[in-house]
Amino acid sequence: MVPSFAVLAALPLAAGFRSQLQHTNIESSENNSTWPSSRAELPACPCTIYSGFCSRWDLGRGGSAWGAACVASADALVTMHWMVQCVPAWKQHLTYPCPDHLSVKCDAERTQDPCDTSALGKCEADTCHAGSKPKSAHFTPVFCQLGACTQTECCEACPVGASLSGDQCMGADGALPHTCCEEPHPGSEWDNQPTCDDQILSLSEPTAMRMQAYSQTCRFDTSDVDMSASKFALTTAGQRKLCEAPCQSSPDLMAAPMDIWGDAQSLAGRCENQALTSQISAVGFFAAAGEMDSVWRRCASGVVPADDGDDGFISKGPE
Image 1 (tube, rainbow, N blue to C red):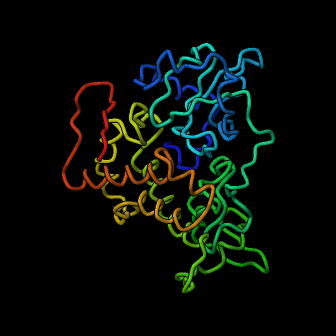
Image 2 (cartoon, rainbow, N blue to C red; image 1 turned 120 degrees about the vertical axis):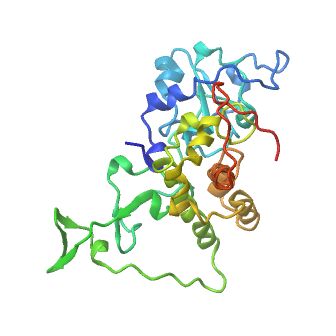
Image 3 (cartoon, rainbow, N blue to C red; image 1 turned 90 degrees about the vertical axis):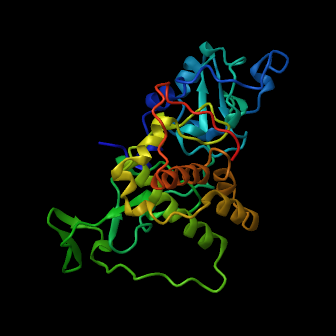
């Protein structure tokens, strides 16, 4: 079964760790004159690298030999695997060339403890609306992409046939949350002046739905990310997945904004929000969605990436 979008953010540590070591021959602007002589010269790593992406044991060898990590910025909120490369000491971490889109090398030993993820939302008991119920723990993300969680991240559709029995909502397989016996609202009416939280959620909800479709329907996974690019980009193989018939016929992908990344950047200029600022980076949630939306549209117009027989990487220049 193809993992859901939420599961991509909560893959086992070993899977996340291995995914970071597939790209070791990446060109970088680093050279001998700029390599640090010790980890003390590096900034502390964002603590979120250890929220299901890097392994403390692998990067620290049980505390005996600490390595480093490559991130977009020292204060990045890492919420997806492509937002960090985990570099243990045995990978020559001080001279390891970080890719351009993860250009900040940081000390993996020095992280905030306890890790403050208060800028990121978590699925709560009241997150799911009428007609939906919480996903199982296995499919629920450790934390959400932004400060407010979307229905797509936390919830799934209720089974058909739920009904009230006394004061309990019941389905064919037993008790269900009360939301399964509530009628979905036809649509919320926005205030004349919606708050920043309202605007962020209205942007992130459909984006999360598309990202879930890309992972579930189009079979996108972390191996489809081109780690040699200067920003989030797909390998040739990853692009071709978005051209396949099931992906092209997904109703969730047919009404994407022309530039969701630009929309998010514009919103960040009006609304000060730490999580939103992190997710408009070159490898953030909105950059990823925007690139996949663009590839999907090119496929829909008949432009299909050629199977060039190489290792699947593409060289992406500025658009």
